[in-house]
Image 1 (cartoon, helix red, strand yellow):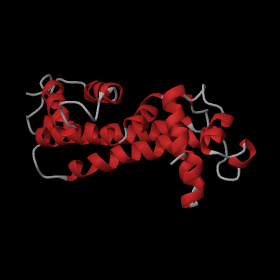
Image 2 (cartoon, helix red, strand yellow):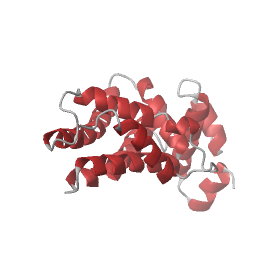
Image 3 (cartoon, one colour):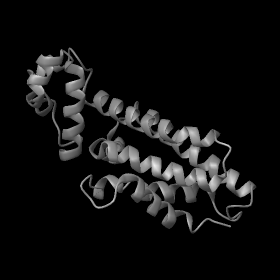
Length: 198
């Protein structure tokens, strides 16, 4: 079913527009995608898009905020868990990879296109990203306090190193690969956590 047929079938043009925009931003980049490209892919006249969305940047902001929200929702339970910090960090890394695996294209846009937001919207995206980073900082700090993680590490650098590696998984993850998301997450946890253990 094409995007245009999808609009007619489910009566939800906004959802179809969001999916098409996410796909095009992932393929062509935000700057390389025009409103006309989005309209053509959805099967609407360019002017008709504005009945459903404010502008192209509003689409990107919504994709980024929703995408980061999915990552926060996946790891947040582990910030409240009573298990040891290392076990929680491992599960957070696996959860991150599982969210990527759910929709690698969305994750590519979330991780690599957010910088194209304008000065009014960029702070919103940065705030969401920092909220996600804070989940990892909290658990690593609890690991330091418990003596499980080296006390001499720089928390922010450690977190940015872990997330930097995780944020590139959409570039190479394949649903048809030999390993599933959980297995890849476990292997990444082995590699990423070795440098911070006490």
